[in-house]
Image 1 (cartoon, rainbow, N blue to C red):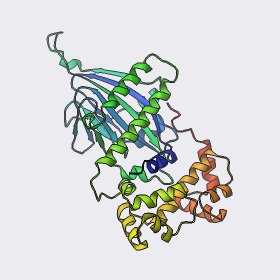
Image 2: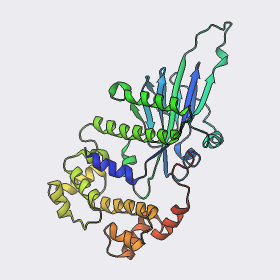
Image 3: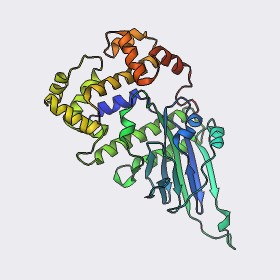
Image 4: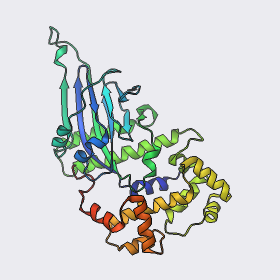
Length: 339
């Protein structure tokens, strides 16, 4: 696996963590989260795409995409929903609940983090105050990123990622507990610390998912770790402005032109030159958003000799000319503003 290639994509798609909820349940419970697209504007204005994750600190519970079979979680486990699916967390399999009120999410988005929630099932009070109750503790967070113009990573991830603590993730629960405890003291920098931890959890989740992928699995992540396709991808990412030809990419990949094309399409479902064109637009979008470089200068930086040719390619993929895209995104709320 090329760690630098993964880092390059994560930087370019503006990965950003924000918003924590420290949730404690006592007694049977279920919580149903709506799709990430429903809450995105509330929890992370400016993000193209919002994913939710949960770290289980205490107890055992179940996690499921709505309508799909559940998986059992143990203390220290992490579950993540990269495609932003609506999902259910519950104390027992098969439970459902009314979806979380989006207005409530919006109302709490600017509260100091983490927002603490406590739920106790009073219906279980049955004649004695000494009755024992099961207790659960979940820490819930959101991660935002860009998916436009081009994000090859998100599409390559499954709908649900379950990361057991027993398989190398035990450190996460400890870090989360420390972060939550320290944030309760309202020390300076607490929210920035929580955001960075969210990002660390996501990167760790992706790396562990890649390590567990079976051989011959299609997708960008598998292509990244393939000895031939990975070389071609690394070359394009290292120098997107270069006037690459199939001969040059094939040489980098140590394959013939036809073999590289076939292998690339098999793994990524698009030809190398099309991938290069789309990645150039993602790099260009970042330059348009974060610098005051002219459109002509950005065009040169991503390999176009003609500003007009670049503008046509950008509009074809993004839906608007570069200058118009820059105006829209320069005036939108910054990613993670709600946090």
